[in-house]
Length: 63
Image 1 (cartoon, rainbow, N blue to C red):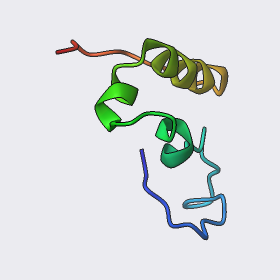
Image 2 (cartoon, one colour):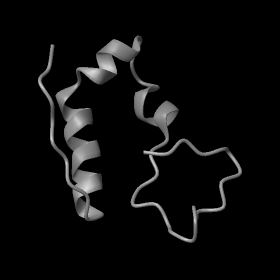
Image 3 (cartoon, rainbow, N blue to C red):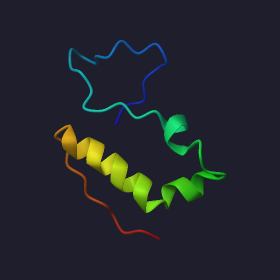
């Protein structure tokens, strides 16, 4: 994972990113970030996008 500036040119070291997640757009509907982090639907959607792009997702233990 790489944090990029707002004016990101879509490449890092000549490689395009697998996915670009816009955190505010993802969690803006929740009152608190904790609600977003525990929303199973949101997590599944992010995982789906990453897998579709060819990535691998492994969830760790949840608290």
